[in-house]
Length: 250
Image 1 (cartoon, rainbow, N blue to C red):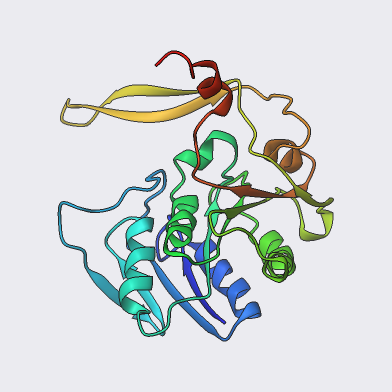
Image 2 (image 1 turned 90 degrees about the horizontal axis):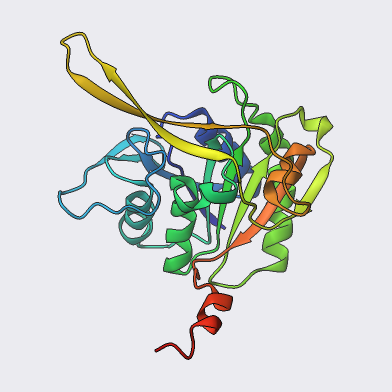
């Protein structure tokens, strides 16, 4: 089995190293194509207005000066064109990708790009408390068995799996839960204006919010209870109840 690893945190991210460790437990043919620099929050962006460059950084490891989507496309259609991968793994993201995160996550976007090419794809993310010390050993301990189970069962071609690992020690994981995408009701995006040393204004985006009580069965609820969240996702965004409500309007 040939596995392609990618991410959105960059080729130098600790989570990517952990992901490669997981991949090597599943196969001896592991390739990595990841962004040259951090591309968090880029969602499914693809580079169309400039050329892309690929830099070899090690054995079967490449950095691309583009987005996660660029990386997967170049990996599959160029670097591995002689033999396409059987599985794409994306992550391990430094921070959870749940609820509304899934629409802006570059980690999940890489998996979606693999899916659109026709390759089974899985995104992996780790809840963190300290950005500099995410506990990737939770994923390296539990992910291989989960991935094997998914591969044995198989899944529809228009679906990717979104795995999120809780903030706890590997032996404190309370279980694995098949979940649905949750929803945050108290998280807001804000912009903060600041001044640099030359008295020029610049801006930072940030998030604010309070703890919530998420619904049972959601990805957020599973993580809060020290469970690994396993959520099947697809790109079909049509809201059927609303479409039904307006079926006689036009």
